[in-house]
Length: 306
Picture 1: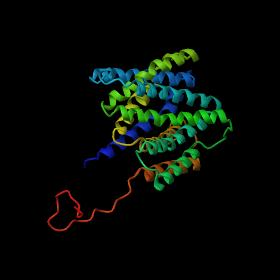
Picture 2: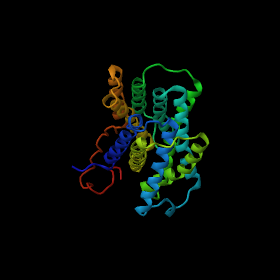
Picture 3: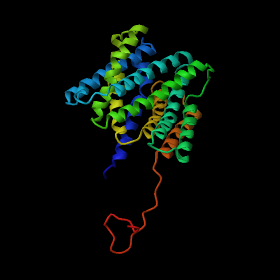
Picture 4: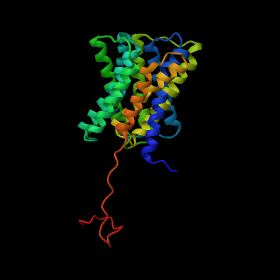
């Protein structure tokens, strides 16, 4: 059975979301001694460099395609801004609350962005599905919540940046393969995040953290964003961001299975809500079959009205 282009794109983005979801558990178990800022910096430096190198080896290096300074700068800045804003929010709110706010903001911002750009209308089906997804994400991160408005603003701004660089990747993908597009954006982010890291100060990984940093950079960043960008070649940003909300599902399940963190009823309901809401909102409603034309007009590619 052949899988449609849309089905392949959904599988690519879903796989990317699961790779994203391994980050917290891997950082906890295999990157000891590294603070959140150091983890973010090293995963971008390793992942971005790997993407550029792979693109070079496969003959689609970023510099072989038309230079779009505005798009590349916007993409690089939003990649770095996402990391900086998110981890600044983590410092004020904690990992759980910052993650919930950032991931929940993503599909909402993506839907509004696609609507403004004329890519997709905000249907009742989509709004209802996203509402269920956001409620599910909130359940996955349920617990004590901080009312810090600055932390909230940082986390939500970070989440809104995700679909912006998604839109940049999709735009760059019009005249270059997905690998070249993602290598262009993340290659531009490497010097930016390196400069930011030098100002803020980052910790070099010890020998016991090298495996974790390698996974975070090569799998949870390079491979994940390559799959994510491949999905963007077919899906609109709104649907891509919606499928990306499977990330916290993976993170919560891994935390329960590997770290022994309790899941509980709220977690199970949250997982069901995220999966169900995503399926409902992203699925294409069935259309009524086209009316059959009069005899003698079959296969001509014209309607009965001519």
